[in-house]
Structures are given as C-alpha cells and as structure tokens.
Length: 299
Image 1 (cartoon, rainbow, N blue to C red):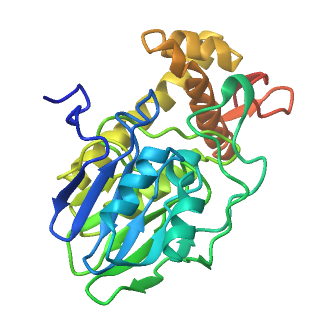
Image 2: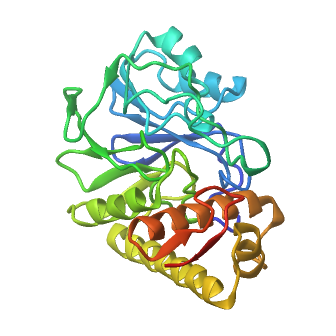
C-alpha cells in the first residue's frame, strides 16, 4: 500500500535497496514539509558512507546503526544542516567515528523562527570535519562521490553525485512529491533557480531526494519545478499590478487552496521571489525593508 506521495506507508525503519549499492532507511518523521519522513541513504558495502543521518529519533538512529553493523562507516555526508537531516548526527558520529563532510557550517540566525518558521530549523552547533567545495570527490574505494554546490533551499546545500553512475542524491533541492521551500534569509530564489540549471546541465537522470520517492527523469522534473517557480513569479507580479502591497495579501490570493499549515512557508516563498525580482530591477521595496512586513510595488 502506498500513500499519496508514492511512498509505501510501512517502510519507516526498514532497510531497502533502492538501487544497486544504495540502501535507504526512512525516518518516522512524517509531516507537511517531510512527506513520509527523511530518507537516510547508505552507500556501498563493507566500507560505506551515510548520506543524511536524519532526525534525532532513537528508533531511527538504532535502525541506521543496525544497518551498518559489521561495516566500516568512513564518511557521513550532509546535504544541509536542517535538523530533520542532521539531528541524528551526534549519535551516529559518536558510534561510527566517521568523518563528517558537508558544505560550509550553518551560521546562527540563518533560518526563520516564530510564525514563519518552516520544517526543522538549521542546527548551528554542528561542525563538519571536512567542508566540501564544488567538485570535491570522496573516494570510498568501491564508490566515489562528487560534491555539487546547490544553494537555494539553504546557502549550504549540497547534492552528491555517485561517479560512474547515473545517480545524484538531491537532498531537498529537487523532490518528486513537492516543490522546495526557499525561505530567506538562508534560502535565496536566485540561487535556487541557478542550482536547478546546474543539475539540469549534468548527465545524471536519476535522483534520490531527501524526502519522497526516487525520481527517474531528473531533467523532466527540473523542468516542472522551473515552470512552477516562473508561474509563482508571474502570479506575484499580477498581484502587484492588482494593487497588493504586502506579502500577507499576496499569500491570501495566490495560496488560497493550500494547507493552512503551509502558509508560513508560502509567505517566505513569496518573499524569496520578491527579493529575486528586486535584484533584477522589476520590483521595489517601498519603505526599504525587504521582509515579511515590508511594502512592495512594481519598479
């Protein structure tokens, strides 16, 4: 039996080989921002890497550690520092003594809090052993993984390509079940769109995302997401032409049919689009404040 997101409802905690040499463990943290939960991936056999250890849920931590019992974990790779992806890191790092590799460390205050907070806020306390730059390669012997900088969802977001394969771990940058939350100040719409173009220019066709099922047509999915963002941008410009001046009014008109639990994320998405439009000279901040309470108009 599968749910509306295409993920079997009974998979949490199970070790499932999603493609040869890659196992997935679904964390039991379903929600409006996580689909059925966070996907933790184990790459390789014998000497392995863990991609996104997941949330700090004891049952999930136990399942991940049990899945690598008798194996050597050389690396823990993080797509980004939201707690639904890295909350389990301290426990798994301590148990495995693996090297932690990620983008630049998450900076304090980067993720919105309060009414506009979305998904699990970034963890400012985690520090990697190795900061990866674009194109850096981690060699595990039977597997090699290339870091791809993909800022947008967060400034530190990375995707990971399995070299000599057709596969990318896309984190929260490209998912099948939903569009990506882009929440300023850590998220940036211009960066997100550029990162979509970056993945689209690569040859890999299969994506394993941080939430939801695998994607078999990466380029097709990227095209859908690009069109979605351009549609949202056009809708915001139309609301400005209609006389809306504040984010709340735009959200009420554009997102009237979505789950109210997602309104905070929708407001931040509108703000991210407004920032992108301001940088391109298409919109102006009437009172100089580019935030959720600012007033905006066409330039």
